[in-house]
Image (cartoon, rainbow, N blue to C red; front, side, top):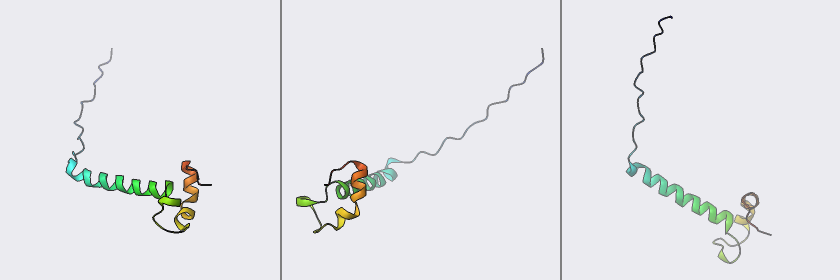
Length: 72
């Protein structure tokens, strides 16, 4: 039989750990931004509207249908 040499394993560097203190503000900002966007797309019309008129409703109209919110 032929002598088969196996390659020697090399150390793979691990990614640096990111502290929770650096992630938490961005996670809270992303959650708040998502909640505001969901409000404007899903709820902004009728009695609960923040802005008078149909401007916001017409701006997000196609997004409402895409996400399954009824509006007609």
